[in-house]
Image 1: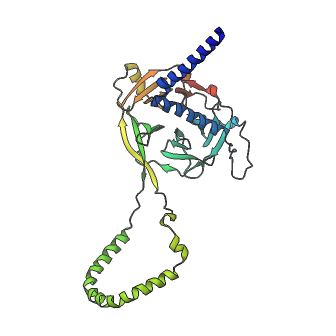
Image 2 (image 1 turned 30 degrees about the vertical axis):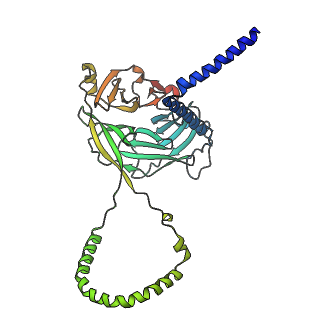
Length: 375
């Protein structure tokens, strides 16, 4: 009897607890959205990791090579970006190679060799950012914007575009994305000055140019039409009587002769070309360093920025030569700095993983031990 009492009491308590938990916790819409977002991210990572992986693409004519144990291919790292969305590292090297590496750092998922020959040879990469699950942007020191997209499970490079509006005195680095305004942004240190600023760049449609000859022809035709209107009015009045009698018969003949496919072709079947776009400088935001301490201010005068990481509305930039981590508040337009440990000395970049900032201290090979936390 006692055992049954204890059993029923326990079951009742569990049921009541589940009901109260749902009423007071999971009934909240914000919590439901967070739970749904978490499950969606897990779903994306699972589907991405279980998908068929494309082979290494060393050249079009080469045979497919297994990428399972290909980490030794990654050397002379230029930029690293960790994507929480797909649970993988994205890596750019000085040899203009783009790698996707598994989240545990043990497998190369795919490789893309960027074109790096001829007069349009790529400069050093200074920033990389994944904007969507299948869209990555990278920028070089000379202001070339590179677009890399995933198509049918394979990363491919789209036509490059030169960012317009930059000047020769600009010393740009880093790459970020403002989702509210749908703009990319970089940091800039004007040459021979202590000024630091945020550069926002925007993608705009290129308006087609109207040829000058067409404009002059249209104006000439309109003038001729005005002059000939009075002369043709009398002739048109006389011709209208006979013309109207033949309209119905000509229309019927035209409809019979018209091909059936032309009659049935809807307007939607005609594909419109996507408008051409260009990336150009939208605005410059100067950053104030008035709140810095005297010692940091002195180091800031010799500032050489490395990396650009966004976290909780702040932008973090590292000066590994002076061992200072700078924090930028874009809303207030201010920048401040604090000293970091010598472990990050001579690092070449930064990235964010699980809300923790890492510096790249050994770019010779891809190794998780080469990434040092600067928090």
